[in-house]
Length: 66
Image (cartoon, rainbow, N blue to C red):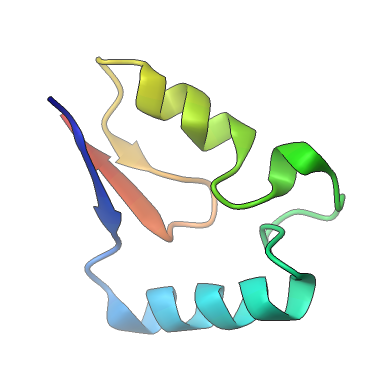
């Protein structure tokens, strides 16, 4: 079973969380304020669903382990 966790780099986590507060929960790394960019974004949810994917979400807040 895979595991999703925060990035080990606390500085990145803090900056992204601050950005999420400013954007109302939308990925601060994306321009468009659309449902697909609401954290956890659609792109990463799809990556999580892929059992072979291991890596960071677009903004590097989350990491999915195999």
